[in-house]
Length: 143
Image (tube, rainbow, N blue to C red; front, side, top):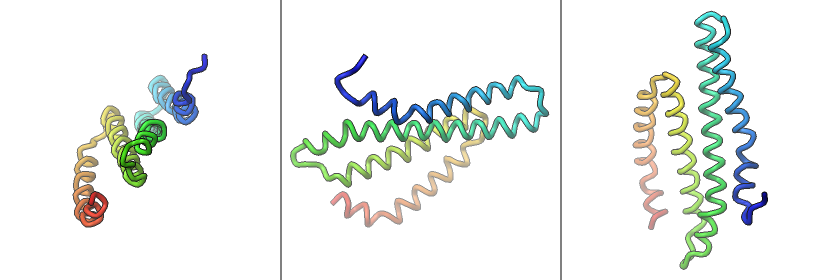
C-alpha cells in the first residue's frame, strides 16, 4: 500500500540496514547464552555484542532524527514568518542527535549491567567545560 507522503519511505530506507544489524546483534547475544563456552568468553563476547547493539541503536535514532528534521522542522522553518535561520535548525538537529544517541547508548549499556554513572558524570563535567568555552559563541548565535 502506498501512502501520500514519502516520510515512511525515507524512514524505512534509512533505518533498514541498522535495524537488521541490531536484530543480528541481539540474536547473537541471546545465542551466546545457549552455547557451552567458558564464562569469561561469554562475558567478553556478550559485552562486545551489547556495545555493538548500543551503537547500532544510537545510529538508528540519529537517522530517525535526520528524517524528522528534513520532513518536519526544515519545511516549518522555511514557511515561518519571518523565516527561521537554517543554521539554527542545523544546530538543533546536531544537538538532538548527540543527546539522543548518548541517552540510547547509556540506557542500553545500563540495561546490560555496565556501570554508567561514571560515564554520566564525565559527560556532565565535559558539558560544563564545553558550555564555558562556547559561552561567547552561543551568546552571539542567540543574539
